Image 1 (cartoon, helix red, strand yellow):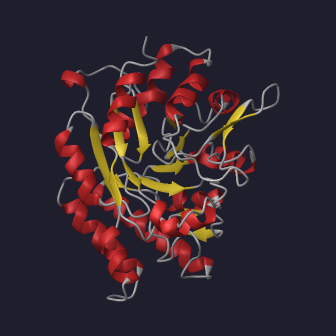
Image 2 (cartoon, one colour):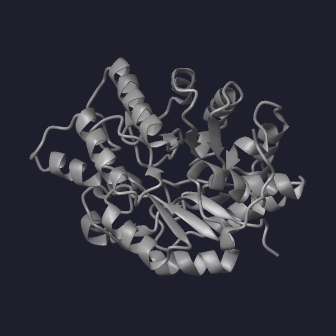
Length: 343
């Protein structure tokens, strides 16, 4: 039996890197973090479709990141229009800047995103937002005030195009990224400022503090933000079961603010530590190095949700209903009133 009426993963990478040549035999995640920006990605949709059929996932919001292209994602959407919708990023602009053809500016990145959104082929922007022109290994700016101003320009774009803004607040681990490095920042608390300034723009905290590791410090900060503002959503696909309950029991958060998004395709391994808390979590093990297979994140993530003893209408919101509302997604046969109404 499926866990929900209409299951949507809101954070999927349907492309994959053939990184072997670029890594030259290295199994170090730090080397992979640098190489991903420099190598081309290939269409990984056959594996994705297989997993969708295997686990009953109805639709995916696919995102380009780290060398993945908008073009390939659009080809996948056209091939599977009932299964995929796509976010876009300023990939082509970033490539021109990296090649020295242009100097990166936030205005240039925003203009590129506006051009893509004007095509009406994308439902949003992601992964993360263009806070800087640097990659994971560093950032163009050291001035935090400038970074916040750049985020607010992204919020302006979200307001203009009526799309949610994705704020990458995870803790990937292993890549040796800087505190602020495109598309990530380790500071979820800045979202307080964005939410106050833009109460009409939905903000999705990607990973919501839990991405790679078992530390709950950033998770607590993400909950602090979500409980303070009506327009904040928490992406929970890498939560273990116990983390869901704290969000569900908070009267200012609840099921209506949780969306399932797993980062499928990123291939962060699931580390097991039997009879400890938590018994399993996603983590890039620096000693073991880069996995060579497609990590099965859906099997683990859905198992965490299956353990929740909650009513099915709330389960349906987490697994799909909130995503349908945020992204105005198509539902099977145009059926309406499948999900509990949320004010």
